[in-house]
Amino acid sequence: MTVLHEINTLVWLGELSRRHGRRLTLGEVPGEVWDEVARPGIDAVWLMGVWERSPAGLRIALREESLLRSFREALPDLAEADIAGSPYCVRDYVVDASLGGPQGLAAARAQLAARGLRLILDYVPNHIAPDHPWLTAHPDRLIQGTPADLARASADYIEAAGRIYARGRDPYFPPWPDVVQLNAFSDALRTATVDTLTAIGDQADGVRCDMAMLLMNDVFAKTWGEAAGPSPAEDFWPYVIPRVRARHPDLVLLAEAYWDLEGALQEQGFDHCYDKRLYDRLLHDDADSVRAHLRADLAYQRGLVRFLENHDEPRAAAVLPGGRERAAAVTVATLPGATLWHEGQSEGRRVRLPVFLSRGPDEAPDASLRAFHDRLLPAAAGVRRGEWRQATPVGWPDNDTHRNLLAWTWTDADARHLVVVNYSDHPAQARLPLPWDDLPGREHRLTDVLTDRTYDRDGDELAAPGLFVSLDAWDTHVLRVD
Image (cartoon, rainbow, N blue to C red; front, side, top):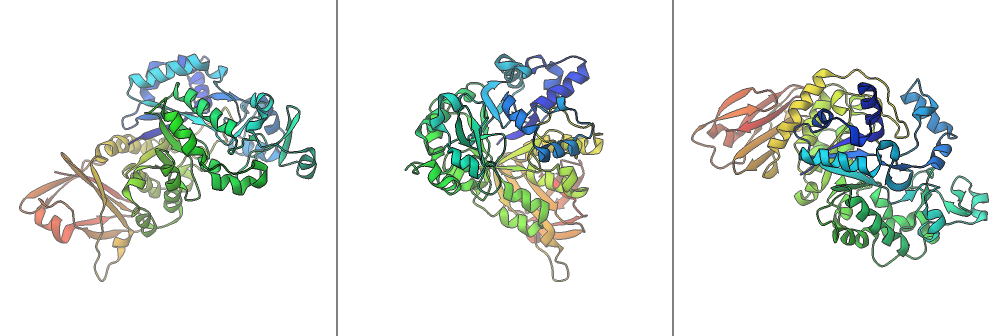
């Protein structure tokens, strides 16, 4: 299982530079800072945004009033120097010189490895910057248009390197103004993708593939139609991934995925895919909805990435107020699969920073939330071992609050744990029959690993009718059963 910590590399280095009074690159980050990054319970770090950003893309962004408005909303004292361009408008897959270049990244990877952490980097398979070398050297890897297309739909096409190219897009939104669309049906692109991912695999232990579902044959055909040419017999990722794994068999591949295509992308070779459906249920739905989601096949669940925020989503502290945020955090931290924690999430940051910016606003950290996360992450690492099984809270005729409780067990050879979450804004009670056959006939001590409270209970009662649980609104138990 992977517990992943996302860091906005450019913003993070800027904050460190101001803290230390000198400009720092990845190769110059002090050891004590890497110690801070290597928090107990984290086993991989995603350095988001290390590749060379596009000057052409930056010029386009500076002309987009809607983007500028979002920058000013996030950073009221915005200066033009704070706008660096998008890390997803990649000019070349070489570490940006301002971050320390390839040598700086190699030094950062060594620092992480020395602390037992793996390094994850981005890859953007759907589009590139308008000044990427491929526009001149390999136009057959992109979706091209005509002067008539540009005249008819200037927002959908761009003139660059003497040709007309389609702007990058997904099928449900207007095109992104600063990027050019790659052609997933191009044999030349597929070969180049293998080469690029292999090169990234030389520098990292895993790759997070941006908007991975856009390259799937069905999705791409619906998005681009005849402009893409005939659909190949083989899908994009089943062609690419085995060829990359031939060079890097242990490379972890994560897919940013939406539209319920997570299972299909797992089948096509990804180790983990975003669990956006769980995120939406935790934000907007009740315990019944979450419980139904967790009935999915366990092998499928092990291949999901659970999260409450990332650089694309609002900050959890802004959309999950009070106790709901902590209840949701216990939920994602103790489920099977991977877990993604976003930089600043544990401090309760509330401003979602556009990825174009190199500086964020000053926000006072929430010391209580940080202390909670400092306990949760290592505790969850100790819990998520062995076999996971969802438990069934049982109510009684005059009390149906059991419906608001989520519960599951983890069983390993030397450890047993029970997690209970009241995912509601009022108290809830239930009985929870526990699944272990050897409970009857002796006393058992239940220790909440988040609070250190202990509860001594009779084993006969734990087996049937089950552990009596009473939790206040949004409260939780993470119990070790001894």
